[in-house]
Image 1: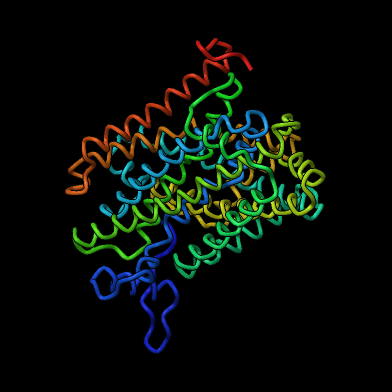
Image 2: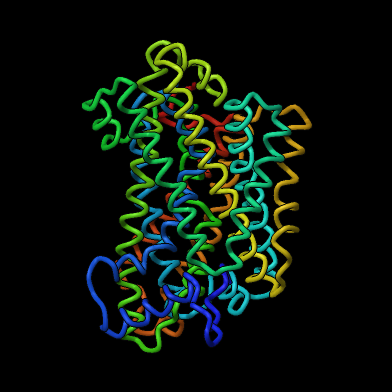
Length: 443
């Protein structure tokens, strides 16, 4: 499971925030309360999952996309966000209907060799995710406070532990902390777009007219896909739904699914707008005269003389909020993945140490950290079909979902999205091994 469910309050002791939320959700499902306040009770799981779509990996890939290709790859962000909405909604529905997460369902229904293979791929994806998130927070601290990168990583680890400690009080404090950090990221990019010049017409064309200027754009597009539709977020969402008040009957499940779908649309629409703002900011700031800006540090040092210290500081604040929040959420997702596939749960601190080890290794080896961020997102894209295929299989089985089974149309759309991801990965492999891709000029 994800964050702990609420424990019953002892007599004479005031219920905690999570307990009060759980009780209020039960009242709302029973029709005893309505209105905006009741709707907000159901907000949380998609908000937490959405931080995966605004993590430092997105910063790295979107920075390179905007600086090198201007607005040309905005359509990738839009397409990836639509795919993300579909699969996050399906993941949440699976958790609501079965009260099991995707990893647990995989362990229960697939042959043991398949389960171990899925677990292995998912653990690699979790480490690649954590590499991006942990490095992002460390880079932000290093640049903002002039700290050595290793010191920034140590501070990031401490802050992440502090966020995770809120899990002891149940799901609601974690949801509120992550929501506040997401608000900080979104506000930062509102400020950035007020500073950096934007060509709205070109941005609109880039968002709705698919194009790949050259083979280099393909690699970045696949990395953007891996940074936007995240394997661990698909596992995570079904687990987060388990921690909340379970429905007692199909009518309650139907209400939960309806609220969940609304939250997914709102939370991931915000995440998509933030991602687009990242590309638009990079395009407006760097594409005209600084296309070689490909690193987060270089972006900060270029933004400051071009648009003032405020632009650079706001950029780093958003990166810092992203790294801290997504690192904590990544650890929660890793717990769900390991416990679901193996049935074992390890302490959060040990999980944190294991998953952040590759980040320390990358820095100690002297690897370019922004390149490491981008390549980690490409790795995620290759891991992505595993949970996508499993989710399509389970949500299309009436024996699993009952009356909440996917319609034939929904199954076809989800299967098509999975095929698109597989096809992009195949084309990228051809590109990596030097096989010419018809119709795609060399970088």
